[in-house]
Length: 128
Image 1: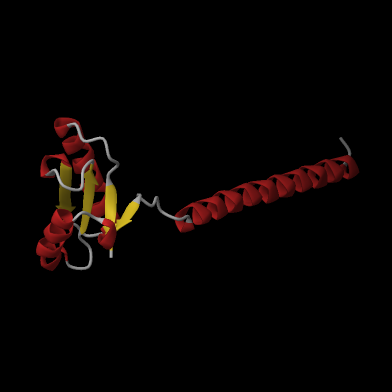
Image 2: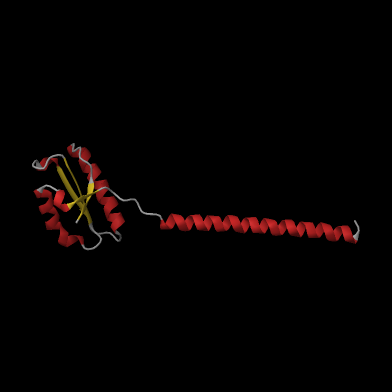
């Protein structure tokens, strides 16, 4: 190979390497952008119910537990009847670091209790 051919060959290789670097940087930027969007996505929101829509016994149970909840604790209810307390489920999760964790744990416990008691109503987070 002559010096001129070697120079062209090296220039071609250099341009290919630059193009590959640009492609890799674009892919990496896309991955970081996707991860950032995922981090900003809305967390899952569990079904909720207003405190005022609950049967009296569940409202009373919530009012009794409210001082223990703090800012993070959450309570979940499920009921088939507004008068039969055997068909009502009330559970709270209070000793956690994030409200989303409190909701998830209370929902899991509610689902387990529903199976044991045969309650058919959905588990819902109490909203004030």
